[in-house]
Image 1 (cartoon, rainbow, N blue to C red):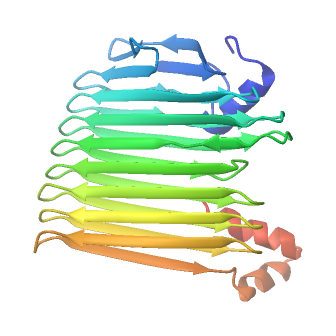
Image 2 (image 1 turned 45 degrees about the horizontal axis):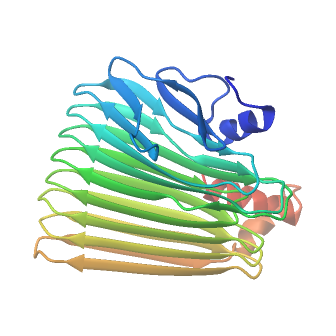
Length: 308
């Protein structure tokens, strides 16, 4: 695949499900450099003038097309910050696949901080998939600090799939969104930590227009001595509806902190939060073990089902 080695190709498969050059618009980034790019008639990808990232422009009426902008790092000691701005026109329906994978076999930390900003036009729909993955047997850490800003115009909608289930030592995810009238946001986060890993997730969503809504659900598993903190806040400034849910499994010596926050500034704002943290139920393990699974195999089955 272009100028990527076997390790980089493997990471790309993990974060973007790509086995070959994708169809449509894409920018593939490896060890701090673009190794392949393609624009289409409807989706234009350009480097920022200062070299800090990308400007992706999606024309009005673009439908059933995709943009892939994954990042892979296989060099120990590499630290980078990249700004990618998405300007989405009106009446679009587009899939955007991002994410980053780090393979660190060295002694120095490797870090990628990706700042993604979305301006979504009227009546457009965006599905955004962001996966994070880490591997490598070096002493250096694998650090990912994604930031996402979303500005949604009237009647627009966005689905966000945020996944991190393996190998990332430290992550601080910060997501903010502002929704105009009749705009709708759905977020599904899946997170697993182990060892001494640390993961912080913050979602602050402001429902500014009548008829706007947000549904944010996070599922996490904390194993070993890892730590997770989930900070969910929805602010309702109009006749709107918001729902947040934190559902977590705690194992071994893991620690989880859920911090829900709801702020209603309109009498017609309807906001709900749900949270549950607990260990795997003994009867679940027993039932699977009676089918011939070991305790460890039963735990894996339960966790895999929980994080789907």
